[in-house]
Image (spheres, rainbow, N blue to C red):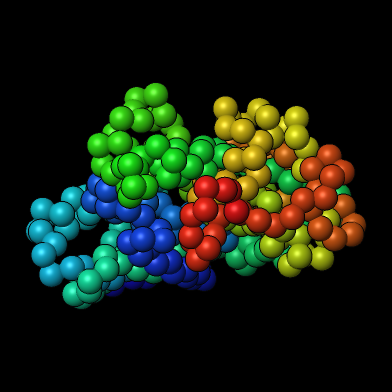
Length: 290
């Protein structure tokens, strides 16, 4: 049974073998971890505390019990590490030619959820979590984790470690800052979003929903990670949290400022207009970000 005091928020996400993951690159444990983490992050982006996951699997008939057990381990350990008040409470299992993981996450909020539409001119734009590492990781896998015919290859991907552990781990088993979402809501964040499709694309969604202009600062972005500016802006799948805060608010850890909200429309970097390309599983991989 699922019960909380206060209001409930819900989100759902589906991971399909092919556009969303490759079994040649991800272990079943990593798949469970990532499926949990991405949904926990969506709850956090509403200022909520994750409470329960409902997991539906569609698996090929030859899927082994040990595979499913390791998948379940990934779910359990991700919840324990990232959001200890949350657990898998149920779900469903079906047969399919293509492995698919569908997760519904339920969370609680003590007040109104933080939405994408509340940013106001004068607010500070801030990010909690890594930027660009996951995008660098997926580019490495598609360029060097493949065989001579360009097919995802387990041995080729393994050869990228340990040199690129940070990038690969950010892509295959992300660690979003779940507690930061609640911390942001408590100090009065005006808008928030999970950065799943790239900083520019997702920040653009908040700017449009709020009817404002976002101006990002390149020098501030350079302090986040060793990832390139291209990956930071367009890479996607970081599952960091972007939030806007009134200027007078002290940013809660681990949020760091990356720009300002102004009157107007669009998103720019130091005054240069940016366009909302980013991670798009529907477009397939063409060797480019976005």
